Length: 59
Image: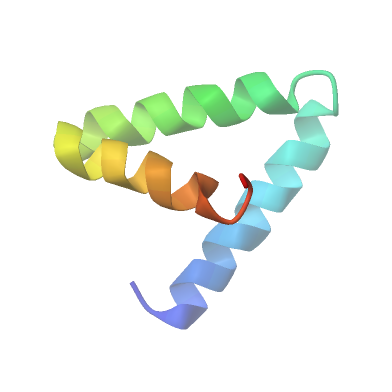
């Protein structure tokens, strides 16, 4: 995926997060991750991505 593609994904994600609202944004993100994980089909890659996403957010 190119940098431009990633920017398009980020923009679409931001718009949907705004559309579902703050009360449902966490549920939306969880559902999105589960859908993407299912489409990816590789448990090890999905678990590594979860760890990678949390690295800069946890101490």
